[in-house]
Structures are given as C-alpha cells and as structure tokens.
Length: 74
Image (cartoon, rainbow, N blue to C red; front, side, top):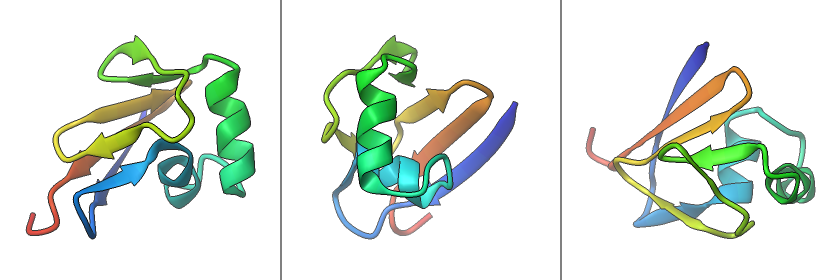
C-alpha cells in the first residue's frame, strides 16, 4: 500500500481537495465522484460527505493509497 503524508496549512482540508492534492485524482470534481462511489474511507469508515473536513491525525484510504494528515508544524 502506498503511503503519503500531507501537512495541513490550516485547520482542515476538504476531502475532495485532499484527494486531488495527494494525486489520487486530477480535480476536486473527480474527487467528489470518488467519494460518492463509496470507495473512500476516513479512519476506516466509508465517508460519503464530499466536503468532509479532514483534520490532523486522520487517515484517508482509497484502494491501495493511504493518506496520513498531519498538523502544520510537523
């Protein structure tokens, strides 16, 4: 499984934008489609809210990709 660490710039990042930033998709719109398909998990649970606010300490998984989100100062 590929693991990526994303450092936040603020308090949170919207799920569809995180997927775009991590390279899992080419646009925020494509990220929304992935979330709507029910294949994106946050902390092990399927997340269907496209603009879910992902915060530091959370882990997002999509197929063979794991994205760890860390605080701005880490």
